[in-house]
Amino acid sequence: MQKILIIKHGALGDMVFSLPAFEAIKGHYSKAHITLLTSSPYKEYGELCPFFDDVMIDDRKRPWTHPRYCWDVLQTIKKARFDLIIDLQRSKRTKQYLRLSKLWDPKPQWSSTHQGADYHLEIPNLYVDHILTINRQQLVMLGIQNAPPASLDWMRADLSLLSLPKKYFILVPGTSPGQDHKKWPAISYGFIAKHVYEKGYTPIVLGTHHEEKDYQTIQKKCPQTISLIGKTSLFDIPEIARGAVGALGNDTGPMHFCYFSGCPSLYLFSYSSAPDLCGPTEKHGAVLKENNLKSLDVDTVKKNLRFRTKD
Image 1 (spheres, one colour):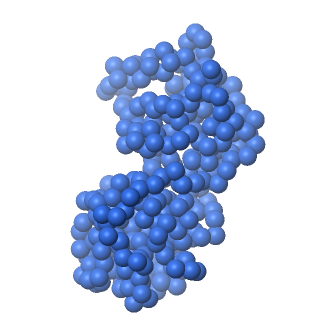
Image 2 (image 1 turned 90 degrees about the vertical axis):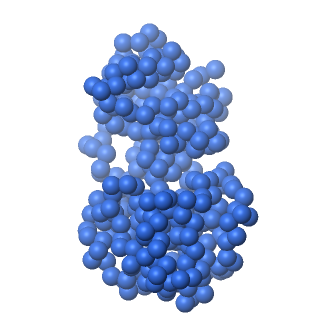
Image 3 (image 1 turned 45 degrees about the horizontal axis):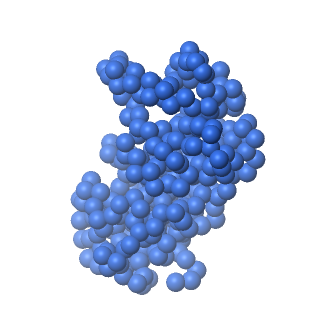
């Protein structure tokens, strides 16, 4: 049986955008044993994803501070004797993995944008095209001509304990820790919460404990806002999004889950996010970009909100 390793360490948004590639690889190599090499936060995601048979963890520790860890990761990959390694991370780290694997016996074949790969996709850099496009081009080098649209149909959850209202609108006011430049002010989300409530939809806020203060600010502007802060798992979000009338949020993983679940979604991008590289590509998704999100006015966001045509 052919053994294939797919490398995708993260982040969450990239994991979601890589779903078409994961599914296409599984379809093309239907009889192969396919392993995902990822980082610890996405272990459960990989284990439950139907396109992988196994998951290996590489937490990308720095080799100069954790040489033993890095050595062990490489040895684990080597001992698995993969026939093909498909590098969808395309990082400096995977470049080193490729170089070192040339010393192994037997040598695995590689698919990558790095020089030396057996299936080499030549691109100037990773910031010239959308991640979906680069993934598709890389797969063509392997003879995989078609990648399906991203689907989260396999991510299902029981939401009965959340007691969601009949009609609700999702707000995602947070982002990854340390990425505050990607955040639209919480007070502005508060005005949007009031706006959607007046339209007949209950605003609900998704996030972790990092967004608790944001929720409190939003709730002051719209007391009817419901907090799901810390109450949901990754697998709950697509199910919640399927029942929502729309979603608004920053450039962060939960928004990608909303969008790829078919929920009408409006993203707010700052200077550090590029719609052409990682934005929505289907008509139910849209982006408003402002270099400094503090300068993005509420009325502009109101005018561009997206809602399901049928409740």
